[in-house]
Image 1 (cartoon, rainbow, N blue to C red):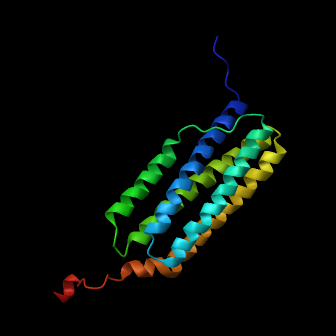
Image 2 (cartoon, rainbow, N blue to C red; image 1 turned 90 degrees about the vertical axis):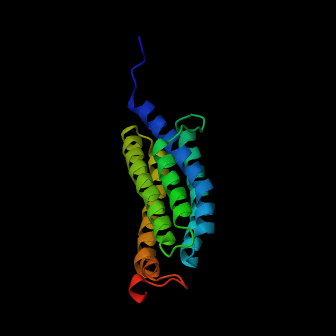
Image 3 (cartoon, rainbow, N blue to C red; image 1 turned 120 degrees about the horizontal axis):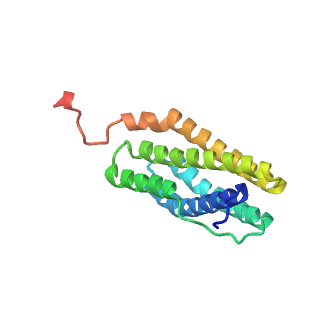
Length: 175
């Protein structure tokens, strides 16, 4: 008879998923920083690398609390979001809209993470994993702060920059 899956199993599967996602994000962020045109956006991506490294470390501590080896399982959702970001970098290279696409990709990642961490917090709370709840809440707060700062950056600068035309390109009205 097959083993009945429990909330503990689901929690551990969710941890493996977000652990994979965070590690993939660590490989994507430097590429996004390099592609970014706006210096503030580049700095935001570079700052988030260090934050993500801390988040990975916290996840390792959560694994420790449940007495499981830190491991990951492929997260198809994050793979799709990263693939879309790579497509944007390729398709919009040199375009004033590149940074908007990078921002949208970064926020898609943040929204996925916010959803996952919120769920994991709920489950950890239900399972009585107090230290895990504390660690996961800390990461959730960082993800929410990053999302808000990306929105502010988009609204303050990046959206306006995307409306400008690159030097040497005439609009259809001028021709």
